[in-house]
Image 1 (cartoon, rainbow, N blue to C red):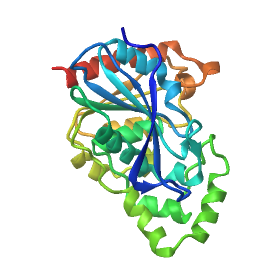
Image 2 (tube, helix red, strand yellow; image 1 turned 120 degrees about the horizontal axis):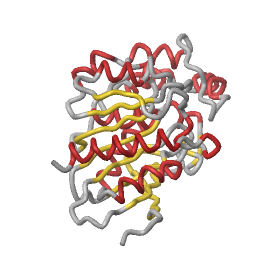
Image 3 (tube, rainbow, N blue to C red; image 1 turned 60 degrees about the vertical axis):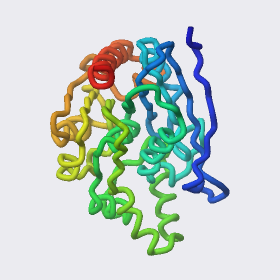
Image 4 (tube, helix red, strand yellow; image 1 turned 180 degrees about the vertical axis):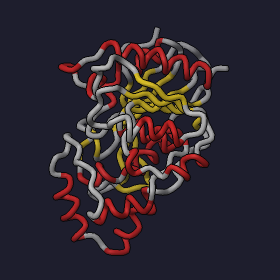
Length: 284
C-alpha cells in the first residue's frame, strides 16, 4: 500500500547555479508512488511563490488512480524553497527544473506534466508553449507592465534595482532565454490549470510548437489569471487544446491552494478532468 505522505528529496542541478551563485541549483522534489508497477508519471508544478504541498490533494488523487507523481518546489519561487526576485521572473528555469527531474527520477511509464497558475505555464512550456521575446524585452525594460504577484508585492522595485546592477549583455540575453523553445520530448501530455503569462504569449510560435495533447482549465471568477487573456488565449493558440471552466461561476484562483478559500467543487472537477485526460493520453 503506498504511503499517504510523499518522499521528499533535495536534488542539485550541476548545470545551473543557485540564484545567489553559491552552488548548484537546488531542486526539491516530492514523490507520490502508486502501487502500479508500470505507473505513468505526472510531474506537478506549483503556482508562483507557492509549494507543491498545496497541491497534495491533486497528487494523491492521481497516485490513488495509478499514477506516479513528482512535485517540484521551484528554487527562488516557493515558500518551501526560498523566494528571490529572480525566482519570480526567470520563468524558464521552472521548465528546466522539469527536464532535470526527468533526468534524475526513474519514470516507470509514459510522462505527463501538470501545473497550477505559473505552474500551468511551466507545464505548457515543456509541451511547446512559447513566450514573445518582444513582449518579454518590454517587460524587463519596464516599458510593458504586468501587475506584481500578490506573493511578491515589491517585485517591480527589486527588478529595477537588479536591472541597474546587471551587465548589459546579460540583460539583453534574458528575453531570448525566456522566449526559448523549452520543449521536452519525453513529455506526452500537459494539463494546464489556471495558467498564467497569457499576456506574454507568442501565439504563432505556440501554435506550431505544441505537438502533444493539452487540456486547459480555468475558473470563471479568477482575477489573478483572468481566463480571457490566459486560459482561453492558450486554448485558442494551442492546436487541438481542450479548454473549459471548472467549479462554479463564483470559483476564483486560490480555491485550489488557500484553505480559507477552499473550493471543493473546483477541485473535484480538476481531479475528474485530469484523470480522464491522463488516462486517455498516457495509458492508452
